[in-house]
Amino acid sequence: MTTDQQLFWLRLVHTAILAACLAALAVLIVFATTGHWRMAAIWALIAPFTILAGLLINRGRCVLQTRARKLTGQPDGWVRDIFFLRESWAVRVVRAFILPFTLAVIGTLARLALA
Image 1: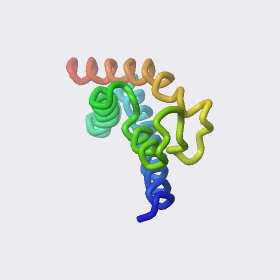
Image 2 (image 1 turned 180 degrees about the vertical axis):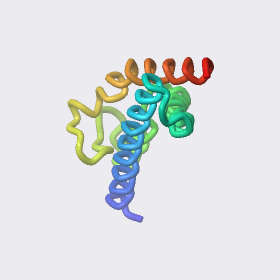
Image 3 (image 1 turned 60 degrees about the vertical axis):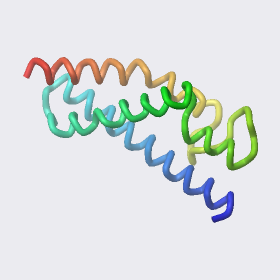
């Protein structure tokens, strides 16, 4: 597979992961606030914990961004690793979602513990 093809698939996977994380966040917020969708919320907890594990393993850097840099031979800076976000937004996604995910996960875990 060529580098361009690998980057295409990496971007496609990364875009799908972002969409799945946004859906998981929505499910977690609904469950934390209403108690509906219990089983979906339990499954949705996989997303933030998987992302957290990847960040911890890769010293705080996105695993897919690291792979995109390796594919392009660019050791520093940002390489397009997602389809529709501009660089100015993409580099802030993780930081922007830390608080919403933290609150949603805490709310979900609290509701699960009290149920």
